Length: 129
Image (cartoon, rainbow, N blue to C red; front, side):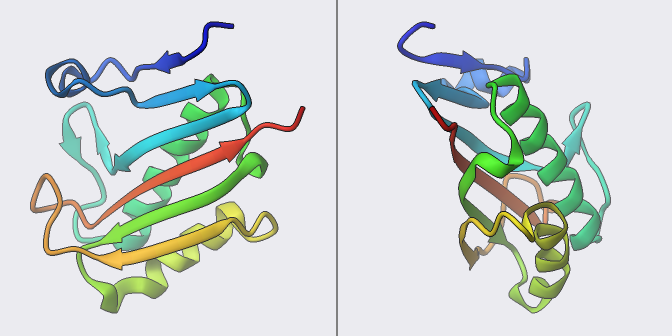
């Protein structure tokens, strides 16, 4: 395997802004901040739980493309536009990571890239040797 395996979603912004959706280096995988978009449109508008599930499924997909699994995730970072809706995000996070229990940081931000986006999540995974 190359020193760094870059994984793309083929979203034009990756090229435009100079980033990768995910990067694997050895047994470490980093997943970029992911939002609830599909085909360029925000999904589950005004639904924190629905957006959170969509985002976590995206993260799962890119982990798998990097040769990792959800159980390899050690850290998640979540950015919510409304902390009063934390319980909705937490419900989705627990559905994906309840038994895995990665370290998590969740913070409130004033806005994300699109006004209909409610949550953005990034993750780090360690694949066992």
